[in-house]
Amino acid sequence: MSIPRFLTAINGIAQLWAADGQFLGLLSSDQSDPNSISNFYGNYGSSCGIYSIRNSAGLYGSESGIYSPYNTCCLNPPITFYQGQPVLMVTRNPYVQTNGLPVIDPDFLLGVYAQLSNSPNLFYSDPMEQLNQARRDYMQALNTQSAMIASMFH
Picture 1 (spheres, one colour):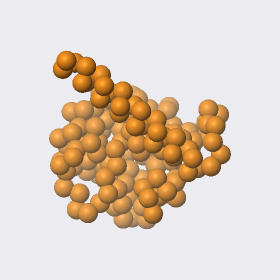
Picture 2 (picture 1 turned 120 degrees about the vertical axis):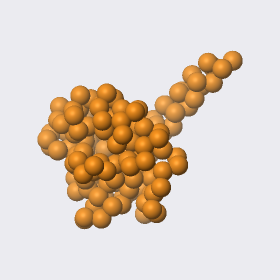
Picture 3 (picture 1 turned 135 degrees about the horizontal axis):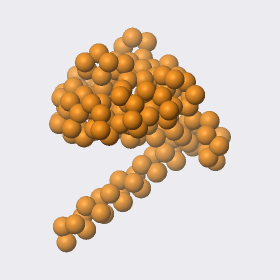
Picture 4 (picture 1 turned 90 degrees about the horizontal axis):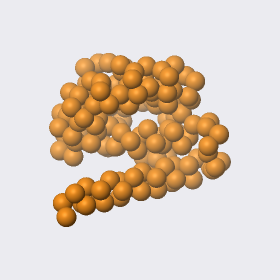
C-alpha cells in the first residue's frame, strides 16, 4: 500500500508523538476535532500551538527544535503510531536512523490531511485525486523553492 493510501486509511485514527513522549496530535482531516493536526485553532494544528508541528517557533515545529520534523539535524523526530505500533517517521533529516520505518516529509503529511479535510475549497470528491493534487502542489512548492535558492547563487 502506498503512503498516501495508507494516510487516507488511518485518517482520524493514527497519532503523532514526539520522541520525548509528548502527544503531537491526531492524524485527522477533521478541522473541528480539538486533537486534530488539521484544526488550525487547536493545540496540535495551530501555527502558535505549543504542541503543533506547524509552530515555526516551537520545540516541535521550528527548524532548530530538538524534536521538530523540520530540523534537518533532528536525531529523534516525531513518529506516527497506528494501533499502538510505530508506522511512519516524520522528518526532513535525510540521515536519521529510521529502524526500518518509512519516512515522510512533514509538509506532505500536513498537505494530505488538508486535502482530505471537509474544506469547501476542495474540487475533488475522490480521496486519491485529492492526494494526487496534494502531491502536485507539494512538488510545485519544492520546485519554486529550488529555483529561488538556485537564483541566489548566480
